[in-house]
Length: 324
Ligand SMILES: Cc1cc2nc3c(=O)[nH]c(=O)nc-3n(C[C@H](O)[C@H](O)[C@H](O)COP(=O)(O)O)c2cc1C
Image (cartoon, rainbow, N blue to C red; front, side, top):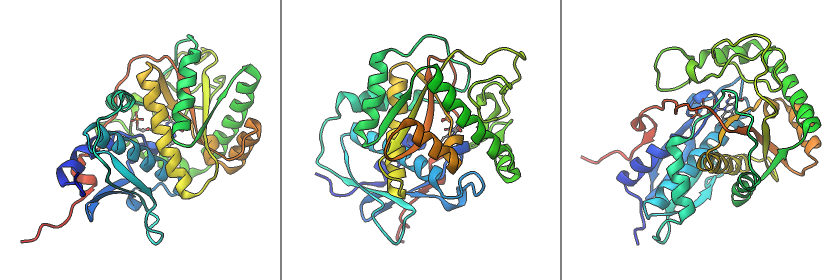
């Protein structure tokens, strides 16, 4: 059994890790090899002070990248033991992975790994076809496997109540010029290695739309047309809300997203009601759950789309300095 990961293993796994989602596609992560272990850290230079003042979003993104990293290492036959936030004095280091006993990947690991490159945020309207019960169950299992809960918002009145909370959070955020400036600054109309391509932004929101989609410069659509029939809304949550809980939530988020992709489902995220504390509390109370909502997803059958760009792997690696 190997006791240390190599630069080659790190580089290969990070190629998959960076496919994780992040707020405005800022990709707020760094990866390093340290004493034979792979470490994942929040990149403080890629923060969003107005949108994500507490660093919740960056920790969710790093947790999602960590889940991809775990899968990539497992599928390569070199699974990891993971310690979350291993250094109390360095809370930005969200995880340390060391080699575990080599074994063959499980079928679930293989199929989730296969979904990494196919997953993307699908902000276009979904088809009216309902998500089957078996797929709903699989999404819940994915969250539970990562020590989180997933609550589906079922029924017109529950969805309307959720939508009201989400729209009011959206209005609160859009009234903040610093938040708007950050959102606009990360829209990309030319090819770029980060930010949200305007082509991935989804159609512009119309006043009658049920769910408030964050505006990323998407195309206009015919006024007066409804966006989509009742979508499936899913809320992912954790028992607590420490920084470590948020890293756990990021891993669960990615597991749910990959499970959905593997089941042929499309997903987009709506985090406005998570970002506004009063809305998050209203959401928590409406669900009647202990713990904290960490992410909201819209799930359904989507139109084809494509993965968004990422920075080259070398830009996110901190490699040991080679001795002369
Ligand atoms: C913490 C977090 C919050 C997000 N919030 C939203 C959101 O409110 N609206 C949205 O359209 N996308 C949201 N996203 C999705 C990102 O914009 C998306 O992951 C990023 O642009 C990369 O694109 P991809 O998911 O297609 O790879 C969020 C992602 C994360 C990790």
